[in-house]
Image (cartoon, rainbow, N blue to C red; front, side, top):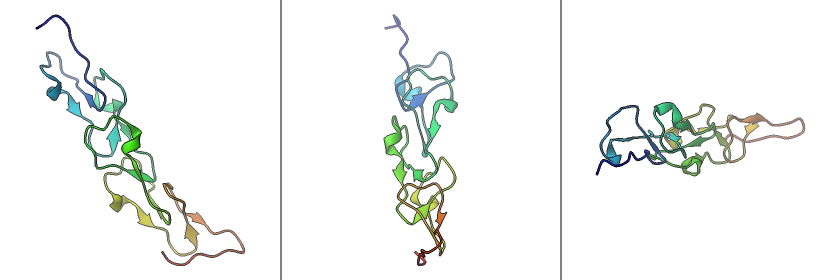
Length: 113
């Protein structure tokens, strides 16, 4: 009705003026999310941290970022599938959601996962 402008909701953004309709607010791509409203650039979409991934589009919370399983890691941020989660090599280990595999300390060992 032209009496006010509405903010793009969480998970969406636009850098355009004269935007008509919420569907013209761009969704954050997979591997990214934002809990901010009224954002005017894709930089407002935060990457899932290392050790996590998301296939969701237009995500409004970091909770969509799924942790890599124990024995796996994902060093890069913004991963878009579980294929980014790689097995730890022999002699190394990780807990769930790890960004990198750690060496087994002296006196311990680990099998190939």
